Length: 164
Image (cartoon, rainbow, N blue to C red; front, side, top):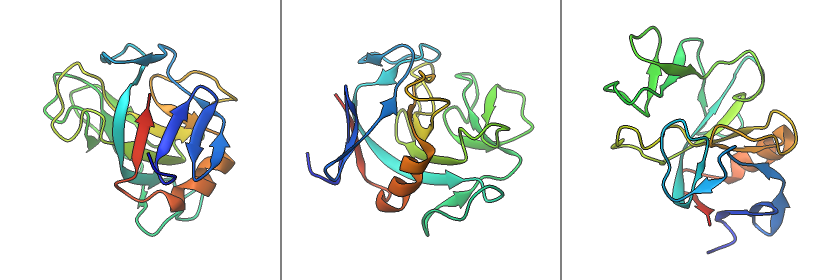
């Protein structure tokens, strides 16, 4: 591990010597992640992208990609674009990225089960804004908005996320 790794600990997410309170999946941490289990997958993951709502905040980093009204993430294991960025409408289940609430105003994407997704292994492990302090997610890691805004420009693609 290096100081530039994001390390999830029982006390929070550690990065460059600072500890940020974090929420994890309602299913805890799992070494056998499955679609819909609500677990945060154990392992070493890599940050692959940064998405943001341009109507709600300024571009947080030069490499950030704006979330458009039709942007989604495929979460249906039957879909050919399972666990990938997609656009609506489509015949398969998906999660809208442009939400009414602020959870996805800023999102770091990871390589969990990506780019060659295994159906049923779970989709979309993001780092995103939490609903309320330490409130469980569906498997993602969630942080206070101010902390995520502080971290996003410091976390380039390729940064390791270690979930022990």
